Structure formats: structure tokens, C-alpha cells
Image 1 (cartoon, rainbow, N blue to C red):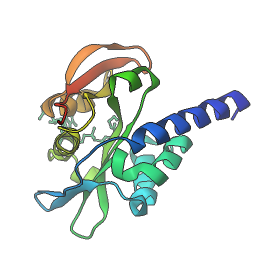
Image 2: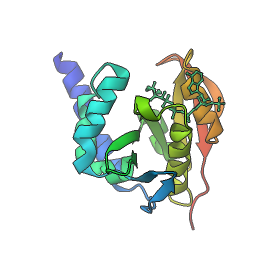
Image 3: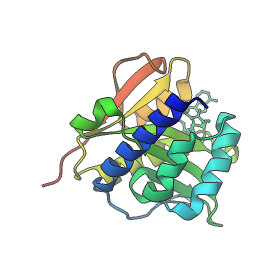
Image 4: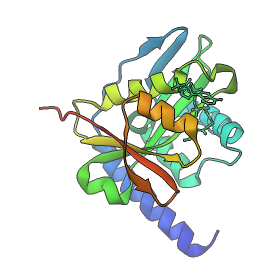
Length: 182
Ligand SMILES: CC(C)(COP(=O)(O)OP(=O)(O)OC[C@H]1O[C@@H](n2cnc3c(N)ncnc32)[C@H](O)[C@@H]1OP(=O)(O)O)[C@@H](O)C(=O)NCCC(=O)NCCS
């Protein structure tokens, strides 16, 4: 990796670390059939990375892995099966363009192949929304790739709405507005 990329990732990591510290979130667990939804814990990070590599065919960005080493409770949601194994995850980060508006960005959602097509991703996204609602964020955002119908549908079904076209990466930029806590 080139030096300017390393510097850029370091800068993003530092900004995310600082901003994520201030994110207010509920940490209750919820049941979805046999699955348990909960906020992230660093002990599950290796499993998330392995599932991510399988689903996306590329490793999770290194600076994000370092971010989740410290900020999983604030930025990660998990679906665990009855054995406590990670079968679904949603990861958030802070985009520079959204930081002043207090918007958190859902960067990855993934569900183990054996559990796909059963509403898990939609339910996990809805769980994340409930944990951040009535906190200090104004909205959650996400991008669904132009041809990624599954990602688009599960975001829309969880309550996100398309607000504009996204250039990088190309796709739909979706937002789920939140209610601010008192
Ligand atoms: C995208 C992904 C998270 C969806 O997980 P899931 O738990 O199967 O999603 P859901 O069951 O909640 O389904 C969401 C919507 O997608 C639809 N869907 C699921 N599988 C589909 C398929 N093979 N073709 C078309 N639509 C499909 C569902 O029907 C549902 O929409 P609908 O009820 O309006 O039809 C999962 O396929 C995955 O992990 N893919 C690899 C990683 C990825 O690409 N993530 C998204 C980009 S960040």
C-alpha cells in the first residue's frame, strides 16, 4: 500500500475513533426466532472477518478492523445462533461528509449463506435502528450498489429511503432518519 493511502487510513481511523466514542446507543439484546441480536463485542471480531471474507471475497478494510477492535459496542450489530456463533453482522462507520450532521453510515451487512433469504438482514438492520433511535444521532445512511437488489430491498424494508444517487461507490444513497433523545 502506498504511503498516502496509509496516511489517509490513519486519519480516517483517528476521526472514527473519536466520533464513535460519543455515539449513544442502547445495548439490549433481542430474539429473532432462534437468533439473538446484540451489539458488537471484540471477541467476535475474528469470526466477523472470516464471514466477511467468505461473503465479499475481499478482506474487511484494515483500518476498519482496527476501529472495531476498540469500538465494536458502538459500531457493530450481531446476529448469533444458538451456539453463540456469528451468522450475521452489520458494521457502521463515520463518513467525513456526514460527521457534522451526526449521521452514522452502515458500511457492511452480511448474513451467513445458510441463514440468507429468511429476513435476517432486514431484521438486523431494524434492530440496529432501534438501538440508535432516541440517542444523539440524526440519521443512519447506507449505499446499495446499483445492481444489488438484495441490499436495496433489505435497507428499504428496514425503513431506509433513497435520497440521492451515490457516486462512490455507484449506487443508491439511502437514509433512515432517527429521533433525537432529550
Ligand atoms: C444482502 C444480504 C445481507 C441479504 O441478507 P438476507 O438475510 O438474505 O436478506 P433478507 O432475507 O432480509 O432479504 C432482504 C430482501 O432481499 C430479497 N432477497 C433475498 N434473496 C434474494 C435473491 N436471491 N434474489 C432477489 N431478492 C432476494 C428478499 O426477498 C427481501 O426482499 P423482499 O422481501 O422484498 O423480497 C445477504 O445476501 C448477504 O450477506 N450477501 C453478501 C454480502 C452483501 O452483498 N451485503 C450487501 C452489501 S453491504
